[in-house]
Length: 573
Image (cartoon, rainbow, N blue to C red; front, side, top):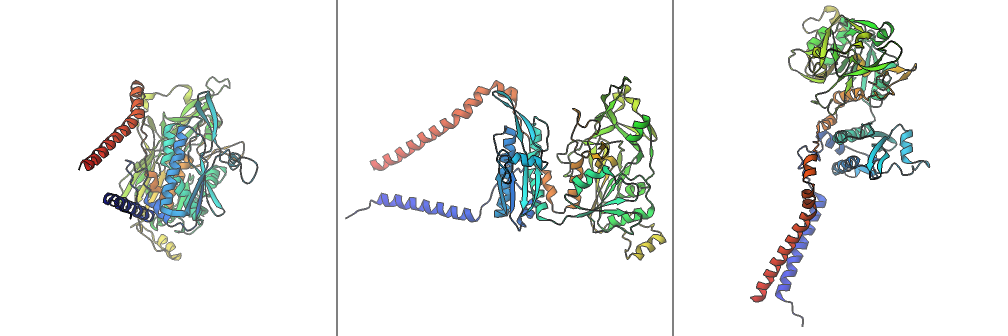
């Protein structure tokens, strides 16, 4: 006959109860679970716009990330950050998000070339990264890209925008900050084939040549459906357009043209003004070595003043500026010197449009003042440096000015606004002064006059028409937007963020998906004190190596002692 000791039965029941509890916890966890984000900057918390978009996914989204390999620590962190973020995406979207990491050295499925070669052929240029190894410096091609696909439609995503051979920690940190927006926006684009319609105004001397190539083909067409609107001939601006671009007009606007713009705004349309108040062009300067900057008389002052801004008839000069070649000695030997009329503009990073935005280049820029407008919020998005100077018009600009260094003490104007975002319910500039002829014109097209915005609206005013245009070299070869044609291909070449600024502005003003809130994230970059680390390196090494071992040893000894004490008491009793 078999007898069971009571203590054995008691212990068996205890372990069986623990087993049931663990099983129940795992079953509940497989059905419902929650995650806590304990970081100060909510690093692992998705924005509400991203969550809403992910919950509405109907088709599976395939994401391929080309960051698999033995990279320096910065790109390893970027790869891990991408993996962590996509895990969060999958927590919300479930099996609708599928992703994988591949190496650019792997062979491509479509051909015998590597994946990296196929990416290069598709226009995704790698970074020739310089890494420090034991043997010295090592060159390594890194493709910081991803591809987001649904069925046969796919879009590339640039995960890191730095192009220098040596990647800085701040650039990589900024790239990780923008990961959520970049990937969420790409998912939105491939799952929403219908592109928002926007309009480009013509009829007042706006450029229509190769200067708009980058803006049209590289910036607008991939994401929006672009149409032309002739303000002179078309009776009204269709409020179905999500935005209206007015870029560098050179001819005055009639009151009837302004009425069309005004009523478009009152009915919910968003306008982006990129205007040059003064007539000042590089072509004239190159031919005559001097140019007179004078007012174009665009007849927009009353409209913009009513909405909350005033574009001043002046010129902004800045010690923080781009470069031009000058023949100082007169013998044909050109030297790159700063050209104060081409200010390099900075952003206060106070809005999703200019968050983590690089420098933006300007050409013959005016300043902007904000004026009182009831219910309108004004946000300065771009501004000069703290070393600026303002010239009234008319002003004579001479190419010989760089024969002597600028007097720094005269550049004391600080943070002069150049781009201002206006938000709120605008009042019509024709309110209480609509003429009978204008009223009849509106009635003839069955459009009643609207004296105020039907809903809160937004408008962007930028005092530089060249900001969104591109230079053209060798006849008809357009350069990237913002690229200086004189420094292109030289050591002075710098990739300005003009295109990013326009893309961000359109994303914020046109796309109503709420994804722009993801740009508000700001990951803090915690740097080690190298001096203190060098002084106390032995202490920290010992702490990290031996403390965990000692702690585990002490816990083991304590557990053994408690267990021995417990069972010795039972044995004695």
